[in-house]
Length: 118
Length: 437
Image 1 (cartoon, each protein chain N blue to C red):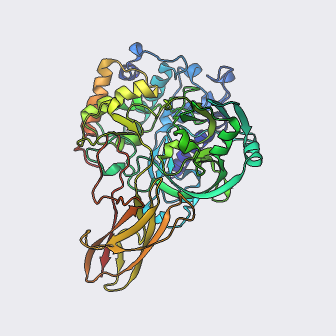
Image 2 (cartoon, each protein chain N blue to C red):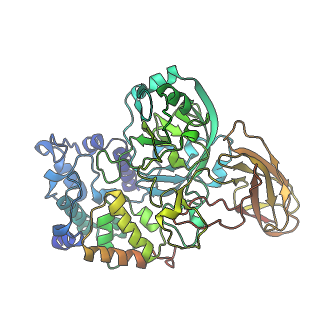
């Protein structure tokens, strides 16, 4: 499980933009705790719906903001793509490895797209 | 139930003073580098709370709410707020339902909250809070709140304050951001001094173009020294006698959640011009370029664009005055009234830098309109009370629409105005449902 969580946030390959950021290992550890202890409860993913990419989305987003801002959105895939780029360029987010980023983008576009139910 | 209360309390503690919360909740004392757990203090408690050992505990920054506990969405009743809609809990963004906007001066308990970053710790000695004024000035200043209070003329004004994204939820395609419906607005009674007077003391140089405001709110990433947001206004707006540096709200010291002890209040413009937790006014020789000034943020297309269009950055310009708008505050939507029984409709209207000249209401989906009584603002930039007596002619479902017209003859549109990438400036007419029985 720990390895799976590390993979989810792309542990070995994340590039840090500043030395003061939260230690990645710590993040992985805490997220794994969340996943391990509360897997049965969707609330531990901040109410994100089940689906491929949920762990990646949760673990890469919630160190700065809660899932409420995600769950409000109904954005086209292109806009989600821009949001992820903007988060890195403007908001101090770490850069996700390409395959993790792709999973997050797929997840967001599928569950929080223009036609997703409110 | 108990668990929810505990979680809510936890978030509240961490929002106010994260390091103190660490100590209070877990007994945690960090190492000198503000990471880890000095002599293990608090580690066992935190491990118990998250349900397992924490292998990388030495790296854990102090004041960091454990992620396993952080992301709950329990009912949110922080900062003494009542009846507000939680758009976001981290960062805190709270919207006022229209019927709670009914008083002339919006009570603090009901006033909307828009934050871009965290909430800084409460100042132990508010009067010692300091702001600097520097940049394109003859004489840079450093002023305490006590000096602002004693050395400048004190003014109290009712001023409307609205988020630039108020109404974003109405746009299609849906722009990203908090999905405000209509209640990211309020009319406070603010006490402070004129920014113009402070700038005059510093001596604004002829090359001054814009202000850049900085605040003490921490960036969401936790990166020290990174501004959560830093916007400003053209010098002419900064010198307007209604643009204030504020320390009082509705007769009370400015509450922490509203930017206390000191904030800017630049009325009629996007709320982000009214920097909270003000620490610095940097007078610039160019348009300010802090976070929130560039790209698509708080900018509108210079020319109209099709819904969903990709707009090049060079075609976007900074938003200034917000457009004419109104809200129906009574009755509350979905009210039931008697057939033929007159009842009072009322609300407020405002128009950015302008005043409102007329307010009309319709009970028939905009086919016919009746002029309401409209009060003059108590001072410029205060919102204006309107009221009308109406009655509904037959049993059934009605919508009541309100339409304000500003002093340049510009009206609120019945439909959502021009789409823009971030969903600003939606001033479509407010509609409520009323049933006659």
